[in-house]
Image (tube, rainbow, N blue to C red):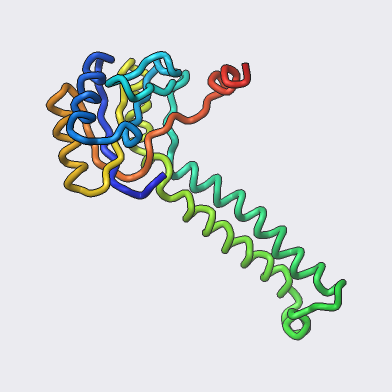
Length: 199
């Protein structure tokens, strides 16, 4: 979930993805920096002898940064409102009421405090998820490629120069589309994958 350059690439066949993964490993990219997703994943396929292919699920979905941030903000907002309300309305029962002078002038001050805490925690939660997942357009585009049977690779790199080197290696070894972005490549949990995991 690091906010570092991420190289994405799609391959038509497992064999091409395997060769590209091997080339990345030989170039010095660590296996833990490489993620692979396909409809044929689920731990049964390993690329370059070190990178396990994750299952994409049906329909294929990749973690979407905007969905993650929105969900985190919503959860943070609920928690923040509950916390703000507790502070504003319960503390006076314990003899602590820092809002008493303000409440006399502005009757809705307790509600405003609860809303302010909710907004603060919502923003903080969204900020914490800002580097997880993919930008929406890329998440949708690469999910469609997975649906068509492609293998998608993601390579986390430390610098822009490393990202360009990884992109070049992937293109040389058969990637038919590549992108450099930031975020992480992870399949989103589908109902089918949840059921399989529970079994």
